[in-house]
Image (cartoon, rainbow, N blue to C red):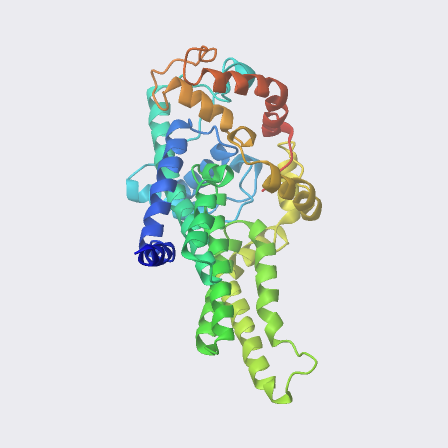
Length: 401
């Protein structure tokens, strides 16, 4: 009897975890409430540069064309257009007419109430605030794609179901991803596009090692197309494209000791990458050509720097920015308090008022008897010491995008 019980326990311990269907349900059930909570409780334009991104969308809606790089078109007019075109289409589906991004600075300032902009809405400003929240929903969907694709990447490299689910949950609960995917910003789209390109690369490598070369070609070419879409979403995706193209090319390079008859295989693998590069430019070449035609450079670097100087923004070199800014942030900034817009989120949680033209300006912080009192008090003191320098970046900081 004891042996039977021991065998039953061992069998139950080896019982497989819930399959992919339940993993996807868990990811959706965890991510959507978090993302929707953040986006609904964060007032319009409080996330970094959201007003400028909305301005790009409204230009597309109003003029049926892309904005040129100019001070009059806002501080994000240098960005590639794919995200704004999709948002303009989403706005058309919702039946929202073009509106102006009216920004009124908060009366008491960031240090006193944690908000950058006023919440004294006129009726038209209240309607615009609702529209901004509706536009954010598309970013939430893109963020869900990032979460699911992280899980898919784990499955592609052979992780167990629990480990792949854990990877997806990490991204679903990662504060920076939640913030980027819950506001109007092109980061919300470039994340899932780069994630999809990585998944396609991994699937292509798995197909290559299994001898399924036709599948490998289709997946590598699809990777190139997706990377092209990422390039016309945000130029920070270009390093990802370069790395993936180089990694896809490596198996085609000659190696010492390889049989001489393998040149045909090497040529085939090399042609896969060539076709992927063709797919990349088939999607993105028009944008680079437009930049060269209008500004004399494929990336419009000089034109971007000149107009950003009017906003006192100074783009930094990619190498120093990645080494001294992005990489430390990825390692250290895991809390809500280190994220852009976190002050407005905690204030919104304490006020329980998100959108409304009759809302009163928040004053003070919750008292110590409130459930959020200790949290808000700690945040208040932290903002006094650290928040001002960060939020001065809206006018004098460096341009990260």
